Length: 177
Length: 177
Length: 177
Image 1 (spheres, helix red, strand yellow):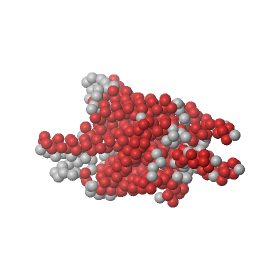
Image 2: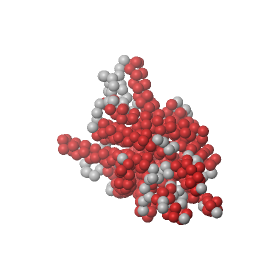
Image 3: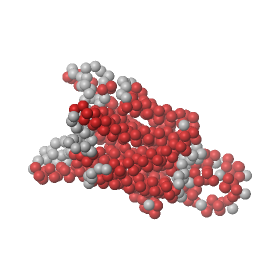
Image 4: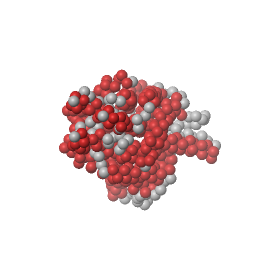
């Protein structure tokens, strides 16, 4: 009798388990989202690193001191000026902005996609491919610039995955418009 | 007897169903959040489109080739230079940045608001109005510039909705500070 | 007999309660996330305020009108020009961008961390410290500039908390790679 009650509401039972550690797909999302969050935070440190590196190299070669921090209170050295638009720093900042533009909406989209109870192996593989694509994107954009179309392919991979998830969710929830 | 047990904990039962597809309010959130994610990703494509469009138009009128991509490896054509700060491209980028500043916190705020079990019709209508307001914002900002106050109204609509959700959540959770 | 059935699945029962208002840790997250969302939205208003303040002060001292809005349709006054890169406005915008770079990934990371059922008092204190650190960061960056290392300490506090959460989650979910 108790078994019948459980069998009569299979959907409700499955749904409630979606956002828990009992759901391997959710764990897969947790792991790869964590990887991408760490990657994004490392971009901040990479920007600071670039600022210090080019500050130091300029000092050594030109016996002159131009610092490339945007704020006056960041001038840790004397006899230096505020400078904007260093190309090496700006490249990392563009890569970081691109991360924000793509990875942050992806986090929400993937979480939403998870709630629609997708096929486990499809979902896990999408999470893996998207995360690896963005790591490649950062490498070929900010760390070691590589000729196109490497960056466009890495960029497009996550974008297509996000659009696919959006299509799946939109079709499932269209009647709640 | 079993019925009594269920009746005695109505809150717990309702709460567990909030973040599932059984909850129409959650489905409404899923749909409109998906719409906004897609809208944000299209901004990236619109930026690239603007870059190519103004690149091509300059070439045709001046027989000269100035490309407005920020990275050297993006120069798909020969005899062209890197250029920043094209006004048409920068306008789309400002609109995109504004999206990130407002829509991404809204995603989190709306999800949090959902967890406080709000009135279904109020919540659904807030989601609809907020999403439509941001689509209007993009149209009057990036696609076809319109005189103020159209943009400020569209901008303020989502901001007020987010503040309202924040007030509701803060009042519900104030004792957990 | 019914009691045994409940006892035999303690994990599943605990897990399902994580993302509900019955979980005080989740309520604590809701409250402090709300505070940070409101703080981020106020940055938009602070930027606009800075634009108007310096527009007005220039008008009074120089009898000349230079407006520092980036869009032509935002020129509410006559005889004024579009101007970029006002230092006071750019400082607030950098602070806002830094918020997006750090707080938005933190929202996702903290939510993910919550799903791993962490120690309640540790989690609540992390949420409190992170939120206060970012409020201090905004004060010493955008409102009243203070010499370093105040800003770096405030910045580093949330970053370290996010890395700690990432480490906890990665260790829990490593086998789902």
